Image (cartoon, rainbow over all chains, first blue to last red):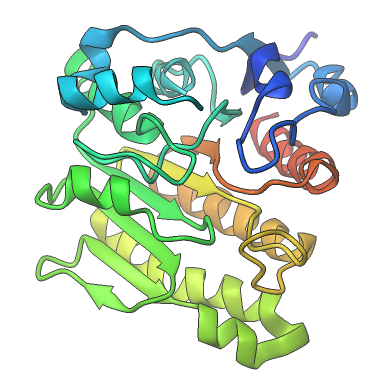
Length: 73
Length: 208
């Protein structure tokens, strides 16, 4: 019987292009480095999606969102 | 990160690993920095609270640096247990905001730093999370404390294996296995490629 996926991996290709900014491409080997795990029936890969400004505003101020938008990251 | 939390909460997944584009734990309500823009953990928590009735959540932060943004967001919120392994010791009056000074301990331990670090996490987090009884456990996992990365604490893969064992054990015991692992700091491509897949394999073993 096929196992139901129970472990999720949430990833977006952009993370491998310009990820954590100290180096920039720390995730360059992904998702390839996960191939053996993605072959497991209990593992499923999801593509991360953006969240709404409305949800971000539950945590952050409008000023922070504006400052992040202006930051040359 | 938000979707991962929702899938776990709805029972569609038992656990998950969330990659990120930029960091989260240095983003407070009205400040950001340290390569963090928005506090991904807090945004996910707020989504679960609003849409799904999440009551209590526990966060173990083992990024090498202090999770000042997460602490800022939840400073006065007793429904969030935040235990951060960093450079200072602190316990809030209500016991839900805890900093554990591990820098000196790791330096003094030398080649035994993996064991010292994992024991610090177990000793300071496990009893608190057992008492706190969260609905969901979040592990903010950074590998910047690995040997040769920018927050070098002398740690190796053995440390992260110990931490995933600890978080899986506690999630299984306390909140039905609901565990969300979120990638934090760490800069080296070779370390990401060798340290992350074994953690996800442990999640899969537990979830399968």
